[in-house]
Image 1 (cartoon, rainbow, N blue to C red):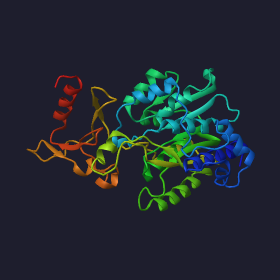
Image 2 (cartoon, rainbow, N blue to C red):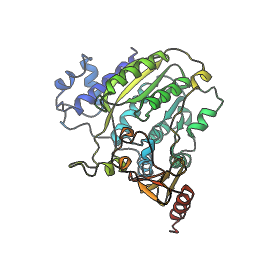
Image 3 (cartoon, one colour):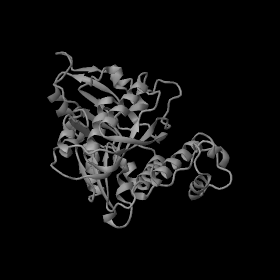
Image 4 (tube, rainbow, N blue to C red):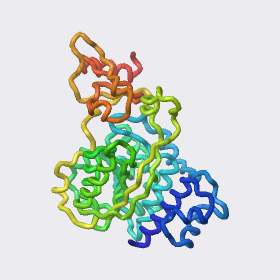
Length: 372
């Protein structure tokens, strides 16, 4: 294991210990799997924690104005894309991990797939634009517009546009946060690997051990598959990624006593290194970065509320204008509705099938323009 990888892993273990309630240097040290005590002490001192460590998790560093403004302007999440955004402290810690793995690379070529909220933190590092060369792949057109407007130096593409490019670009590091389903996790990883240089890194989320009943088997299978793709695991950091509760999740669970908008969802962070070269064109075969679900988006204020149209032709029976999709509206997992999406859904997780998609499109267009 390389020195920068080792230090990054120790830093993650220190954070896990503090998040777990460790309150002193010795109690933190006991949770770092035998790490060098001097390095642990150095990491604590660098973060301003001397003597006794508070029982609460490390307080988040305040985001830059640009990163905070980006977070505040994000559109209401699309349930079909599984849009959970990182908390502020996760953004800072993840950015630190990314640049810990930089080494002497200049410019540092980074590819983000499914993690657009990292854009201002990665694009803004260093005053010299040559320091970082960032490419973002994002399925949400509203977020792509935000990136183009706020960070014109960043190359941002829709998935189909990115995959159709004939390019020999190779990245030093790929940061992924796919929906936590087998097909997307494997496709995101395969795409990253195809565009990564040898010895480059992939950082990706991994659903925690109790996500669903068969998740342990799925994780083991996933690790086996990505190994066969030509990558090796550098380390796994448990519960490293923390997520903000999107409105659709809060709405889906509003009937659950005690559920609120307080962040609770976490994921493990998996760090891998590309150890074997693969043919770029061959690796692209069969890659689909996102299911073709959301075809159109409508809103008046994107940050507050959005409505989405799917790819169907209208699923409601004739003479029935709207049929509520109750299973879709009462859960955030695809398993709850067998991956069957309604014709129309909202950022508040209200879904319905309609008889005539053209009529729905016309009405929503008028509504978005403030005419209905």
